[in-house]
Image (cartoon, rainbow, N blue to C red; front, side):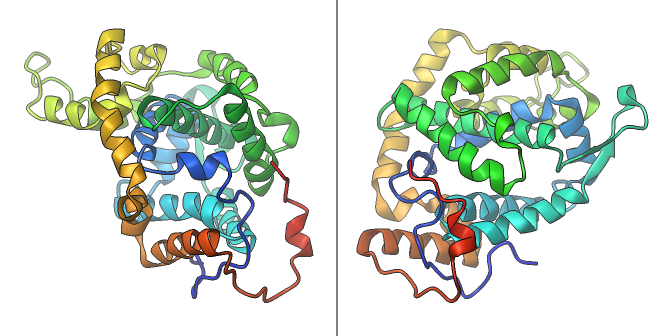
Length: 309
């Protein structure tokens, strides 16, 4: 089942809309945010194991990138029917993604368990907010961060079948959650394999890998967002505060310019797939002109998820 149905329609502004924080932060700064999210995600032993045992990341990495991007932007930029369809597709996939981890014996961990989904959605949200603060045109206010978490709780949480009581409603809630999960994080073999892609191991344990410096320079904007405790768990020295500041100063003008250029700000979704390209372009045009497609069916079942922010 395709993530985005064609022909692409835009019957409404979706569950988020152009005035949402989610639209605002889903621009070029998503790139460093994804790098930071990966560090969070693979330090969770259950999710790392499930991901490595079932992922298409090794066998078909392009497919994995396309599906993830289509889901993310369908959720934020798609109309309500598109977002619900994408959530249904992903929920069906997650229901069949399971794995075991040695220390928990025969316990089967499922990707669709709310606890495991939270460790993807909350670190992603935190990384996206932090990336926008670091490299976007301006920092978000506390109220704007709180509004983002309310959007996520009311919409993404329900679409992903996560009990409302488990979702953070504010930045303070998200901070409390992330701090509480630190005790559950660990460097596993699965995590090490992923970390080696960004931090290649030394040759013979002594000589720096030739690809190490170029990779870290390319990923520096994302690495600078990774919390110090997570860097230490990855076996790497955290970036000093002065280096993080220098990276912000160097990258902010670039990301700000990209975000301000209409033909470039959506470069990520526009380059992923034809359905996603059509979806984002249609959403931008509809938001600017108010020209939405005539609904094909009664939308009452979708309106129950709508929350005015």
